Image (tube, rainbow, N blue to C red; front, top):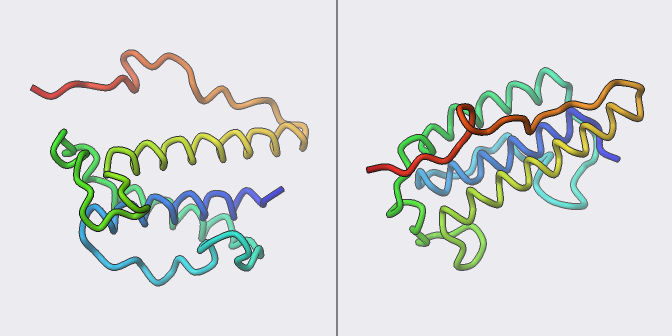
Length: 130
């Protein structure tokens, strides 16, 4: 099982890759430890991972402004012909997968489960612009 700090850095890396692609930027150079399967498995510190996650949150401010045209955009796609909307969906599902992994690690260490999916309406529902 991965260390929680490695998982957080891994997820932050994924979000930073999506942000760089959508914003037409070069990939940040500080993402090397999380490049792919087979990379150095040594976990970074929790504070480093949380800082990387904060960086990813700032870099993804484009999500608030995303419209149908942007979400359908495919030029320079990360994964073959994947569009921005699919890349966003992949990042969300990838994040939820690893959130479940963190939850399992915590429970194995004797902590209670994290109920992270609660009520969506009023908290996280999808809004159609227009």
